[in-house]
Image (cartoon, rainbow, N blue to C red; front, side):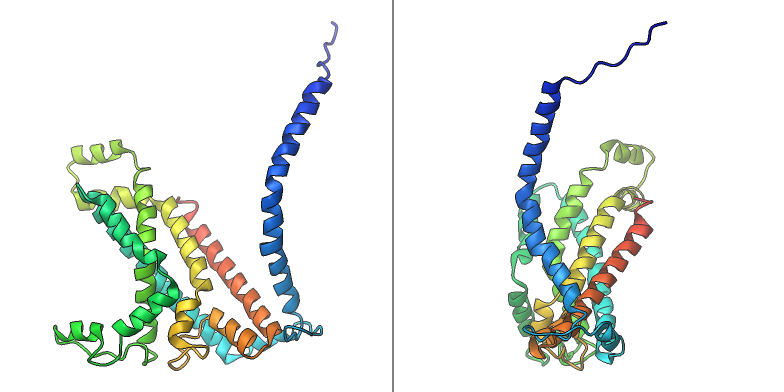
Length: 303
């Protein structure tokens, strides 16, 4: 029985496919070049600096000395603790409050666009401006607007931003106010992915609106929750502007606002110890990566 061999590919077809692939790569080239220049090269440079005692101009190789320094530095350990504490509270409350806000907006029969716009406005406000505004709102005397409002219900005054126990709480409030509108829009987009037939089946079974929200809507939004937790957690590790505006390079009061980025700024731009600052930056990157992997491990399979 004769064996039929497959026809050899035509030269013209292969040439056209090669030109098509080349065109696609040429379109990608500007983005690859930009990423290499503004992402990969700075990342490589930070890693290189972390093994030197550079002052920004000159430096010599010191091996793992910078990493040994930060691991034995109580200020670095405090910065890690503060970052995880403030970041954890900020992300947790922002996710919860934005989900509740999105659910309320979704339940409105009218004016949804208006509420979306109003609640999104804080997200376009600069972090510096937000921090200055909240410094006035949380002024730690009876003249502060928040303390005045609390005084109406016979609470306070509280020493906002001058007491190490209250300052992190103020930073959590700033974060939630700044991000709640943006996250609510993401939740609202996620609501559109829930099939309406599921709600119809729940209504037939006699489920209440609260029961439907908790047992159907929230579980089906796990992929959205995964996305929000990842982007918010990474952003919490990079947070600097508002924390620096409130607490300065020393993370006042009492070092309670010394986060990892404030620690990096202190050594890099106040002490000009760029090797130590670079080592702290690499450590912050690894911590953010570890937290991201933990979130993926906990939610990815269920999502």
